[in-house]
Length: 248
Image (cartoon, rainbow, N blue to C red):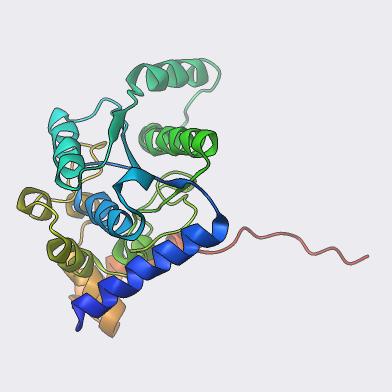
């Protein structure tokens, strides 16, 4: 856990403020999922920039209705605007058009491709808004997700900067509680709202086990095997894109 929460939060807030001022943009836009990560980032951004420079966006896509209600709760708590861009029909059209011209040869991979298309559509939406308003897209992914690759490449792992990317789930919760994120959001079981399962059900390990691995290199033997396998398989998500270096 974070030893000096007030000092750490002050550091994050100043970092956000300095980064945004350096880039000379009007503000930041953040995907508001109604979850702990985005709520904590919204709280930090509001503290750093003021509520008038933070725009939150809910982007339902065959989503759980309760998530939209939670997104509104977060926006109301920190007195920031919330706009809704419903991507359900956009996604259905996209899926239909692509599936008309390809023949999936493996159902599991096809299912995952369909799930991952949703966060990629969401990120397209955020960047469309950001470019239009001269804003930056602020990231909401935590360190536990990054280590095991529980992110969508060019989806939720795409952003201009990320104030919580070096914090584990329990540390993000600590920051969120300190900043007044509603208790309902803090206690909500983490899920992406897309696959019908919680994050931990999909991963096969707990965030506590992932955090333990990050800090000590050890955890439950079975969980350790799963985490190491996922970490290796997702290495490409954490590294710069390989580019051939010319020799002539």
